[in-house]
Image (tube, rainbow, N blue to C red; front, top):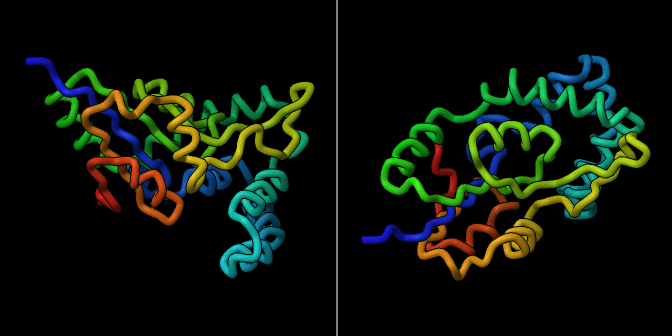
Length: 201
């Protein structure tokens, strides 16, 4: 009997990690003084965002730009590789890894996708090692220098759905399992015929 065709869509931050990876990456790559300066800079925009007067994407862009605008892209990529190899595995939930082992026992022919607002620059190394597909936010650079802007829309909310539909024909899958943990995942969760909210502890 042939196995069902299955796709698993996982949000990253807070769903399969126990910390926000962008903040974790900042603490890895920046000094405490730089982090504090960035906090003071971004704080008013976070307040506006909480009041629905400023978008998540704009606030995130401002924080990224504050810390990395003008950085050589090759230097940034090396930093991201070091982070993904040495630090990122430490924030992956053990319950997610255990779940993955069980799922793969049942059906080895799976499409597993990380769908994240975090950046391709460091996620691509970890997802490649795990043999996952990746849909995420990408960074803009010109003449090998980071501009501080995003090359794609922030992969959050409805943009997650748009990007998934661009890459996959979901009608081809018998089983669509979706995992999320926040407001930014609600639209993506509606794609699933199996939905899991804050599933991993």
